[in-house]
Length: 330
Image (cartoon, rainbow, N blue to C red; front, top):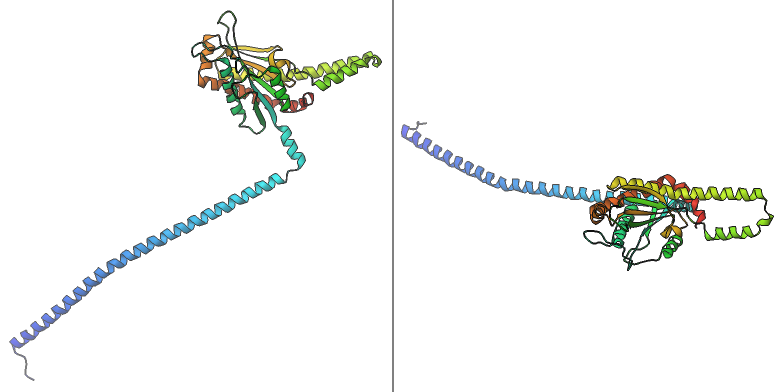
């Protein structure tokens, strides 16, 4: 077989090179096409991954909501069952443990009282403002129940206020008013009045009936009865005095007002109240310094906080005695 000449070999080699070049070009072209096609595929995978994560998140959230709702319902059912399992005696015991308190803002209506030195705020409005603040403070606690003798600008006679307390089975009366000096303006400070609560009318009438038939009683029986009555009245007076002392102490610790102490004096609602009762004079409206405090809303709030704290402290330390005293006025 004849060998290819130099030119023929070059021609063939050139042809092979061109063929290889064409093939390589096609391969490169195919690779580029593959690369271009692979990019959309990657973007598609990212979208799918994002979608799966989103679905998983929604699924977890739904499971959490369902579980939370189930747990909340379970707890609610359990608490309801606990309430239902209480006996009638236990429910009554809880009710009896609640102390009923009446806050009595003095004055009202045409009975305005005197006015403050600077802003000319009448006493009736200051009394009501303090009473409402005290009521709000006390209403936060479940073991006390609070009523106001008046919530608006109206004047209620003192006997009607005492009757309101009795009709609502009130255990404690705290009357709020201001003091005044007749001929001057140097008197200042806070004082709290108390007196021994009055006997229940039925008890008084029964005692009178017993006195009619007293001829048959011996001197020893008379002395024993007198001793028992004095002891009972002393204990009842002690409750009112304790309430007065506690309110006086806590109030002067909240506001900078002179401590005028507690005073045993029978006047206004104290004349007719059958339950432990006090009157707090929250400063002298005729005094410039006291009047400035009574015109200041923030300091008025401190004043109410002090009264509220005193009432709560008294209730906490004397609850059993307060409940035992109900026999005298309910």
